[in-house]
Amino acid sequence: MSRIHITDIEAAINHWRAKKPSPDGITLAPELRALAEVYALLVYYHEEEADEASFPAQALAAWRGWYDTTPDTPCIAICSTSQGDDHCKGCGRSFEEVQRWPEMSPGAKRTTWRRITLESTSWRFGRYADRAVENRPSLKA
Image (cartoon, rainbow, N blue to C red; front, top):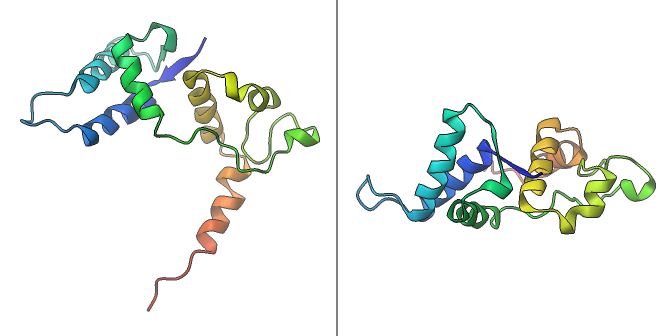
């Protein structure tokens, strides 16, 4: 069962706030109202995740509108699962996650993204991110 974390709902809310700001400071766009309802229920019941399958249709469509703006895969084109590793040193996904990625639901993909981001052990979050900063041209005049 795929679940959507409250931080993803917050990100979707912020996406729609920027995309469709309130014209009067009170009125919310339909996407925001739908996501706010789910968010409020999570807060009220002290939950961190909502079941993707039970999302109201309008809220799911709004969440998918945000989701479609995110990177589809954490892959950095250095896949050690093809060399027999259980978890990819490049992106942090398990062999099964790498294999099933194309058929995974958006909620399942975001769950994987959340796990590998929290772990921050793969090269995606270390060596190559550090190199990008180290190799950035200096802006000093």
